[in-house]
Structure formats: C-alpha cells, structure tokens
Length: 419
Ligand SMILES: Cc1cc2nc3c(=O)[nH]c(=O)nc-3n(C[C@H](O)[C@H](O)[C@H](O)COP(=O)(O)OP(=O)(O)OC[C@H]3O[C@@H](n4cnc5c(N)ncnc54)[C@H](O)[C@@H]3O)c2cc1C
Image (cartoon, rainbow, N blue to C red; front, side, top):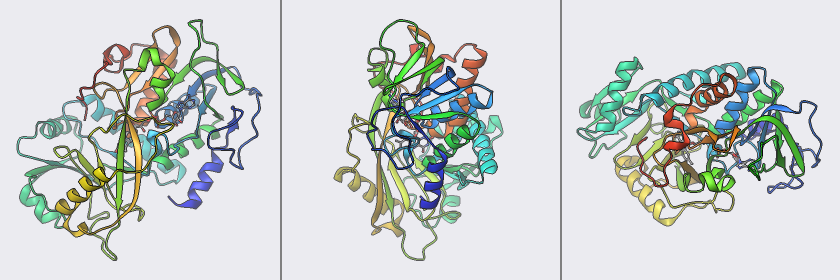
C-alpha cells in the first residue's frame, strides 16, 4: 500500500481511546486513554467492530442522521481483521444464490460512488473469470442468474480462452464465465476510507475493546476499557470474534478458519500478469483463486478451502510449508510463465464462517436492542455497502430479517452452501 496514502487515511481516521491500554500500543496520533464521554452521548447506535460490515453500517446510519459510535479494538482494517487484507474480489456469480448476486451488484455501484466522491482508489475493474470443468453446476447456475438479472457476462469456450489468455495453461478447464464489470477492491484502504467518511459526517470512532452484555438485564451501555458508552441500540459486527464475545449464543456457530494468501513476483518487464491482460479468476474445482498484479504488489494466489480453526487475537500470521507447496505447484501448472517466480509477500487471515456461508443479521435472543452481524464466510467483503444498508434498515425501519440471515438458520456444524 502507498505509505503516503496509508498515513493520510489513518490520520484522517482520528480515534478517541476508550481503553486504558491498547494491545498495539499507543500510536503517536492517538489521544491518551480517558474515561470521558462524548457530547453526542447517548448515541442512537454503538457499533462494535470497524471491519467492512461495521464500517458500512456506521456510514449508512450516520448518513441517515443518527448519532453513531464505532468501536474497534485494533483500529479499522487492522492486520488481524478479516477485512484487513490488501485486496478482495468483487464478483457477481453466486450460482443460484440470487440474493448475493443482487447484493454484490448493488454494492459495486456503492463502492464506485464512494470512490468517485473521495477520489481514493477503492476498486479496479479487472474483469472476473470463473474457470469451469464440463457441466459445472455452480458456474452454469451463475450464468443463468446473470442472464436473468441482465448483468454483463460472456461464456467463453476452451478455444476462446486459449486464444485470449495465452499466459494461462487451462489444463482441465473446458469453459469459463467472464464478468467484465467485476474486479478487485483495495480492502484495507477501502475500510479506512469508509470510516474516515463516517467521521467526516460526524460519527465518532473509539479505539478499545468493547465488552458483550454481562447479564440478561436490558442493555443501556457498553464497557470499552474504562469508558461506558451509552446508546439506545448496539450492533456487534465483530467478524471472527463474535464467538468469543457471545460464547453461549455463537461460540459453536461461527467457525474462524486460517486462510493463506501468497503474492508471486512477476518477471521483469512482463505485463502478462497484470491488468488488462490478466483478469481476477477463480477455479472452484481446485478451491484456488487469484488476482492480477495490482499496484506492483505481486500476482495474488490464495487457497479458498477452509483451513484449521484460528484465533484472531493470538494466531501467528506466517504461511505454512504445506500451503506454499500447494500454491507453487498450482501456479507452475496453470501459469507457466510464473513457474520459477519467487513469493514476494504473504498474508494469513481468517474466514469467519457460518455453518453454510450465509450471513448473520439478527437480534440477540435475550436483548432486542442488541444486533449480531457477521458470518462473512470468506465472501463478505464485497457486500459491505449493501449489508450495511440492510442492517441500517432493520434498525431504522424495523421489518423482518431474511430467514437466510437469521440466527435460527445458523447450525453447529459446517456444510458450505454459499460459494
Ligand atoms: C484471506 C481472505 C480472503 C478473502 N477474500 C474475499 C474476497 O475475495 N471477496 C470477498 O468479498 N470477501 C473475501 N473475504 C471475506 C471478507 O474479507 C470478510 O467476510 C469480511 O471482511 C468480514 O468483515 P467483518 O466486518 O465481518 O469482520 P472483520 O473485518 O474481522 O471486522 C471485525 C472487527 O471487529 C473488531 N472487534 C472484534 N471484537 C471486538 C471487541 N470486543 N471490541 C472492539 N472491536 C472488536 C476487530 O478488531 C475487527 O476490526 C476474504 C477473507 C479472507 C480472510
């Protein structure tokens, strides 16, 4: 990430410290810890978690004239958060899960609008290629959904693929679905920009670890370090931490898994692995996906298969020899020009899976003014704008939550349905 941009964005996202000490130490631009309350208190809504879900929820509520506090233990888009990676894919194909196709299309428009309003680079239209084998049901269903909704796409046969992408050895791939309008979001930067815009609109960002409700009594405030934050409603958008905060309700319903991401250095002077020549791509059959070389970070390749359970606070973020070998071998076969390319960067992140991959947006079973928001399940980032608007609607307009997003549909075992 451009260090100038990073600095500017972070300074823009000024915080008030709510905890006596933060685990990453006091950065020089943070306020000393105090227990002061804000002149805007009591807030209409206090949101715990400034990942993509919490940030967009805060942004939407603030733009609707609500007084909103956004609380994060490590700061927006930190390296521990699921939203903290360099980039995330935004694609429309979701098989027959039309709700996610619609949300993604809606979100893409909102990401672009924010990009235009702020002048920050949040999205790049690389195109998206779903590499498919024979009668691949998921991709065929995606094709049908895109046709139905009128979302731009193209079906490419093997001969088209070979002619168009000479740098790819398609091996077992027999056809592909191409989405020319899809691409990549600059994730960490994007979250920080959303939070900065939220603050510009009058929202308050508080640095500190929020505590879940301690008893079954009505919730009127939230402890953040030595500060008590008063609000009418509370949203816990804590991604992989949700099970830790609500062990009785979500401890065995959110499954944080360790996921590894690799960046390969492209050969000198070689533009075949960056846009416009290389799209973002996924091979669901191999459970591997990747993004082109963006902003010279490297050619990104990641394993979509769920890894072992992971603790987002204490887990070490170093890739394993096993995953390195899998990814290197895949790259050597599928992208022969990168056969000897070195790994120039890596990230270890965690998916925050629900049992089947559907999101969670529901009230706490014992506290009607406490909302649980999460279950991004390795595909949530792109949906931040639409999901945030959906949560804001529930809080400001009421109305039923879609059963797909309800707590009742979240099981205690993992059986992935949404890809
Ligand atoms: C490797 C990887 C690749 C992915 N690829 C894609 C992709 O290509 N496309 C896509 O759409 N999605 C993708 N995802 C999924 C997507 O990134 C997540 O679904 C999404 O970022 C989840 O956002 P969130 O806001 O729910 O959680 P998070 O981003 O984890 O945010 C939760 C926040 O809550 C804070 N918090 C937790 N507990 C507390 C507390 N007690 N007090 C205060 N703060 C607290 C944390 O500090 C954190 O900032 C990927 C995820 C990973 C890990």
